[in-house]
Image (tube, rainbow over all chains, first blue to last red):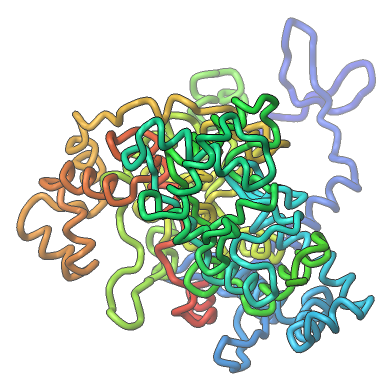
Length: 316
Length: 252
């Protein structure tokens, strides 16, 4: 160590470094508060090393002590382990105030009937707040946040028209197992004349004026006969079947051909033709055990939530 | 030589020593992970004893290449952390084992869009295609760009084998020889091992694209087919119903 250099004006000790001829730096002691904070952080580090997983040792590491976490395994066994995020999560999911409250409500809703849920203000409001999250995570991407769907792609859940049935059992089945909506493409079955006739007839089923009334009459024969075989899924009256997911063509609800948005009769006819030509292939994913793994109670919450969203749900 | 003054007045040495000081911080955190046994979980199907996490099939791997090419990772992470809120929103937390064949991994930390670690099977193929072509047609408030060219662009298969060989060099168990294939049969089972055979890469890719028909256009194999195949497999390899949650806690 060189002998301390003093600043001639103040008499304070300097570091002895000189820049630009006269520029020097005082060698003042560190502020007391800063120094103690610094020692404090060192103490904190040592405590942290002892309590939490820290130093690696070969193929293992210091696991930490005085800080064990207790959780239950899926098998129901109670276990204690050194502090780690995964055990902490398990502990939180089993013991946090929110989780316990949620479990309590889920158990209550799980045991209740849909009528009881609808009549109980407490359960209804739980379904509303828990359901909106479930719906947002699982359903809204396709059926949209308000359940209105996208015409041509994803069914509307807030009208009173249900392709696969709107009673609570059918709705549960739909969510649990998913659905495959299928209508074959008729571009090779029908020639242009037949296509025109069937499309005209389909328009009349929902009370739309046909572009060509004579063609519509011919279309009825194709629809109800073996040439088209449309009746096999849509029934002779065109009312559809819930078991097949085939649309009711008589209720003026258009889920794929956007007839309601078309302004001229010709545009409406084209919209219907497009669907018959290309057919329909739609898939709703599986949300039960084989897919997204929603529990029966969670599915129940979703159905109850849908009942709140849509007056028609669960009614039939 | 290492006196305070000599370091401060010699910028070359200052740079070198600064780098050394900083790397120590990184090295003591990263290097031990390669030696600690529990870092990557051992995830074997409890019934068959086969590895649950497998390398991507050729089609999925090409989809992954497109994922990185389009920069999806800039907005989407693939890492669900073990927090209650993430568990409720995205599903089971990510395991280290689930990205062990990812080069480079796609964990990320910037979520402009949602995490995609468990997006596989969450939406139908049609939804994925529609959403990639025009995100706002299904999610009105989305700010994701449109990717309409994916469906119109044929997937480039010319360097498929080379891409797999490159990944094999960094440790992904794709097979080229009979011995490697047999090792894969033992590790992943025959059905999976067949898909990891580099010699059959193109046949396998075309077969999967044909069977999956991800973009609803069976006449070609587009980049959309590959990307959707990749998205649909994300987070689906480990079936968590088959494990006691405790099993994964024991690795930490």
